[in-house]
Length: 73
Image 1 (cartoon, rainbow, N blue to C red):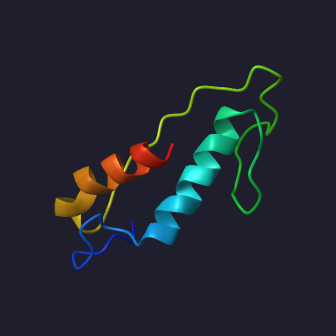
Image 2: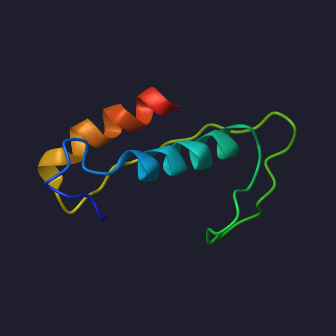
């Protein structure tokens, strides 16, 4: 929700890197620290499917942000 119009990808590289780290952690069955969870944090040994939605304040940048995140994952 904190994307910015003045950045082509909506987010600075370090923020996209952090979201990619979190998505990879979820995929691999981990529970990244620093997030609120509404269900069990354990995924089992097989990991899990991860779906990420880019909902942003700078809506025009959402497609670029999604592509930049996908490239990191």
